Image 1: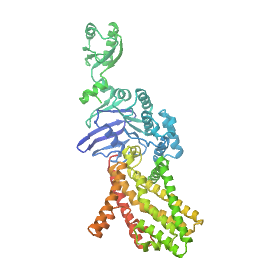
Image 2: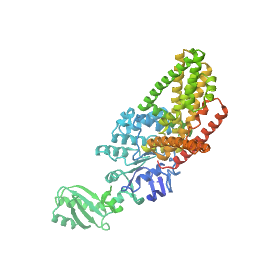
Image 3: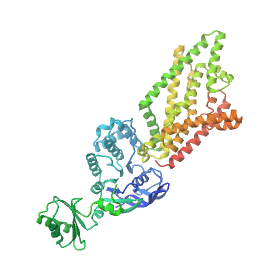
Image 4: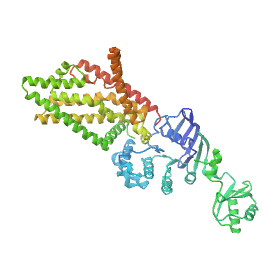
Length: 314
Length: 287
């Protein structure tokens, strides 16, 4: 599959602070791609260079095969962007501002009105077109921001922290929206919420201190550790843990009371993660230990901490 | 995709409509119309005094009008007198008033071209859609169109009041003179708008742009006065004065085409340099 975004040796500094230090990244076409990293990792700088807001010091960016010159906008109609902290003009109606964006993209007046209606309906806010930006809540403005990124049906949609500052209900709405964006479009999303990235994305890139630590399928990132994490209704007894250790591929077992989870390490050369999980599920039933969740591999959060060497993600 | 001239037009039109739709824009426009009507009334009174007075009193009224224009323009009385004799004196007074208030109007209406959008990052909604040259020029032209519109409203308000008060119908010569005054003052405002655009891209904070421009205005005034009256070096005073973009604008209200050419050249050179510097920086800066 050809790359939607191809980045080679991208570098950007703010004075002596290196925000990006030679990043190579290839975002595949179609699906949702996640970019994660701690504060100051360079996520927003990366998105800003791709979008033409910042000029890189070195390196190249191409979108759908077309090269993007430093400081120039990407090829017309190729991308839509939700910048992290951009704001609408407070005094003006949102529909009018969005129609202006459409006109800049070359749509006629009638097409612009229809496109604004379509995208606002898509984010579940068809009624806000006549409202001024200052009359809307932070969450609603975020959704309108996503709507403006979808104007003109761009092939690549970049969403920088689309759920930052939103309550769980609003964030869930945006998750549904991102999943519903057409399969012929590529969505690149950054977030501090690793559970969100894990549930939304097929492939992720982990950035840390301006460098790409890892780019891989999310399943391979979380599943690369030969471990099963099991959430139990009740804490197991030491005898029950010993019984689990008698299973052929299980090498160790320990109860993590702070997480409320049982961690079982298995020998990946003896058995596949799927068979190990099936064996453990049967044994748990035999031991009368009801479980509410069984996860193959570690969570993205755990893997993130391991990959970046941080105490906790932010 | 829209062509670049069409995009410039969209940005320019949006900027004008954006200001006119805002509460502050409406208040400013209504205030200007009222102020223009008040000035128009004063000018009409002077015009009537000129027509009604006996020879001696007429000379007094004419002298008052001459002194008013001369004091605003800092011109010798003789220079102003020729303009007042060639055109309707109240309309010359209106022209001088427009030229007098133009820097203040340009400052209040043109200080926030790109700076405010950079400050709030609204510019990011635009910068991935159109190139920066289009954006910068569109916003500059928008500010210029807005001030031209404002000047036109003020000029028409004053001229209208002058003629209604006098109970006369304006002739073709009067209409041409009003149009000339609007066009001339608009053109004279361009270098100041270009400077404000340059400061906007340098600082990226709208209020700082206004503050910097006012400080520059004061600094140029003080430094040129010190050079002229303290050091008594006229050439240095003139060089310092030329740093302020509306310097020399008063020459444009006269009919002396010799001084007119010099001022027009200054307007063009200042505008080209300021726009060039602003555009270069805007294309390179982080948004």
